[in-house]
Length: 206
Image (cartoon, rainbow, N blue to C red; front, top):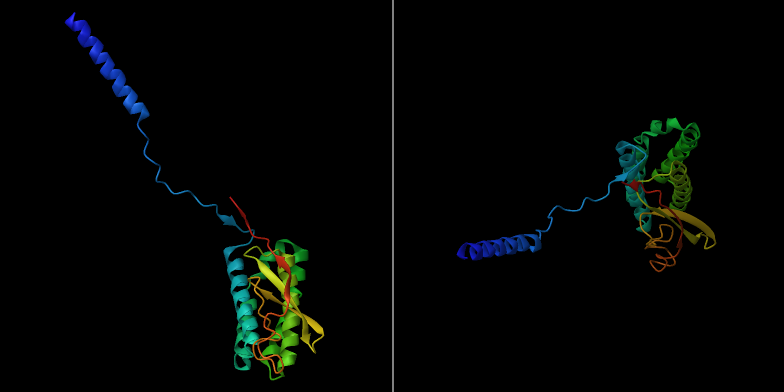
């Protein structure tokens, strides 16, 4: 009889031990979630070169905002150097895109030379407007996927009646045509303008 009782007790202990093991909370998995990786259709060299050019373009735009004529030449020359380093040959796999993109290069050089030259600030701003328009078109043609680019427009950039555009990495309006030190408006028209368009061909994640 004692043996039977002992066996029953041992069996109950075994069942209890099994239940405790099964119901015990499993330790939380400490492995961090893997973040999706953006994959561009372009090489890292291409994206980095375009990013560098865009960042220097934004610096040039800010130089116009500040009416800082002493810095315009250096920043325009830097931007020209950046553009020359973009590996456009990578686009040759699509002849139409390659020919369209490279067709803007001579115009870029002319516009930046005007900005870096000895002309008046209005002439430089007109060249900046042309450059900005063509740069935006180029980015749209190649479907640049390194980040979002905004296109903003001021309706009264020249003579209070002619519109002009510029590019920005954010939706914030900092008008490079009227800026902070306009002869008439001072800094009162810094935020004159609005975002008209944007490019967002960002790479898909996987």
